[in-house]
Image (tube, rainbow, N blue to C red; front, side, top):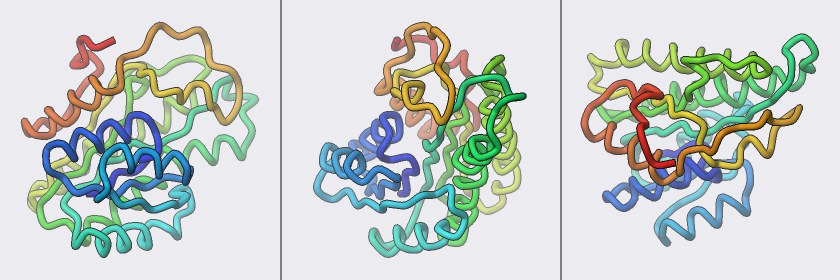
Length: 223
């Protein structure tokens, strides 16, 4: 299966959890060093693809390459994304465009390309708690995550006849380090976040149980 955002903390934890349950993983991310480290931690059979998925032209290439590496695809996990802080009125156009591309259009292009390979299987998107409770000072980020959540839930209905299971997961703030690497601005003071392995286990368990949504309130412990 294909894990987008595989060089990140949560993507890596989800990939590791799926691997422990027998999945063959292809990690995709922009940071080659972090991607390699994640793959080595999961196991020697873990393949990697270094790609900037915010560039639309790469979607089909990434999917076709992943399918060739592991002999097909049975699932896609979208754990990629970027964040920016500050008032929307002063957010630079290039930052706004990057938020949209990395959190919404980029991963959805990959998911759409993957549908040509999926015979059944599943799609998981990590949209996040801001899709339920938008945050001032993070209007653009909240907006694109809400758009991802809505699109994912609509896909769950569209793809039922194709027996593709779709899960929208909206975990609360998780200690992934993303807030320390914003495209712009400075993160507000945040409460302690959830433990990434706990979040990963919760998402994979929900996928195995056939759930179509994981609301923020479903992540009840593990901080």
